[in-house]
Image (cartoon, rainbow, N blue to C red; front, side, top):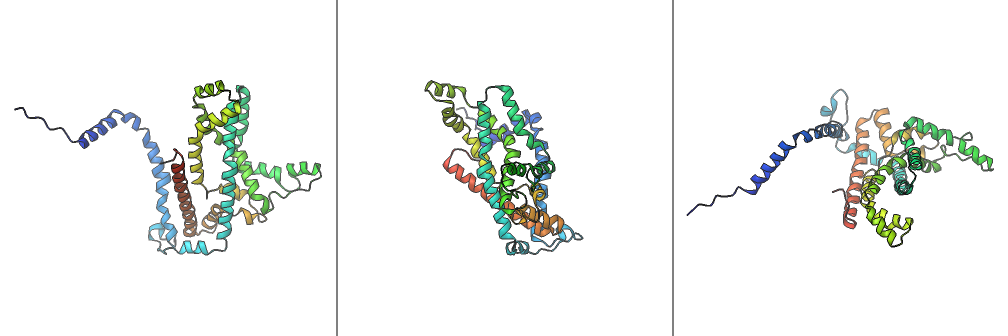
Length: 315
């Protein structure tokens, strides 16, 4: 009676397939090496310094030999009289930025997608992309030129209509609006690129079917384009929630002055001042770590909500 040969375990086959896949695609896998090195050096390497948040840093002793002080830096942060104010300013600016700035790139992308004349379309795209490539210093200089005191261009125009000059940059009441407005101006065009790319993948047959049913261009935007790019919108919104406590500290520092500091001092500028100006590295690291932990919590919460109520999520 012939003896039936035993088949190899499934795990052996799986391992062999993996090795064969790596061997056959080694030339493509080489391209991953620079990406891995980038993340190891610039993203994971600096995480070694996170321990400073729990130490009293002494430059002579170095990071490793500096004494541990537990959560003293965090207790100092939460007990600071500035903590409530910087937390409130950070949240207010970011909430305004999320709910006002976030829809603008989507609207721009939908608008660009409906422009049929290529030259006109490229002209509008160039105009909206251009501010993104201006350096932060020059960008804030332009803002100052338009909004500073009684000599700013905006106040000159208002004066022509008999309206009193508005202290855009010297009053705490206007700082959040000026920052969010400048953010829309600078980033909306650039951020619309990803939605334009998503719109290019919309199946033309869906539009043809909608046209046969008598749908106008506006109705096709609402019932065809928007649902098709909704997964991209959800992913971008989740990523935005992951940056809820992060602001461009360079721009805020340049726009900041003693008259508007009540509204312009945020967590990132506070961490910069305590760390690099006052050389309190441990406390500054604690501020930054607190900031990042809140960002991670918000990212995970937004991802979980998106996963529950839609088919799109990061993981």
